[in-house]
Image (tube, rainbow, N blue to C red; front, side):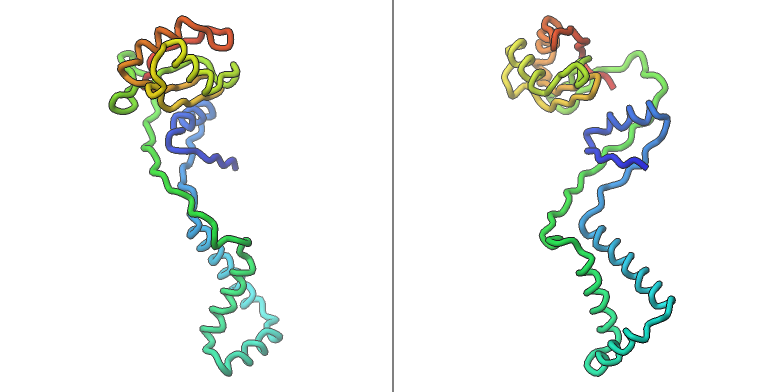
Length: 203
């Protein structure tokens, strides 16, 4: 079993893995700290039940009998479970920050071939995503793309948004009003000695 941690914005990369392997990935949310604690209690519950059914409890029964002089049997059992849980808990768990939950993006339907009239993708109001046919395998880094866009196109730094880089291509969010200027500038320059495909990204 392979487990990968991914953010919602990496949905596109997961789709690529599914298409390449022919296997549909099972998506699950990262468990919260509360989920992990509840799981530990489930394991303790099973362990206690197994011990009770296995017998050989006489040495421990004497301890319970002595405690029953001052405590209810339910209190004794709860205290024993608490002590076991604390013994199994990692040191410093109480200070463990909660893992932030992020809403997963809806899974897009897989298509065997893209429609011929597909339109450029607009990521959000005022922004457009640019496809660059060069990625990590060519030594491309976010700083390379940011520098090329700002330097060659002469656009303000605020016109460049998120930069995502895979092994073979990169996606850069740019201001819609600067998009054509950025594309033309990048088509006229070289990235790591290569002239990759530059265009508006499509769905």
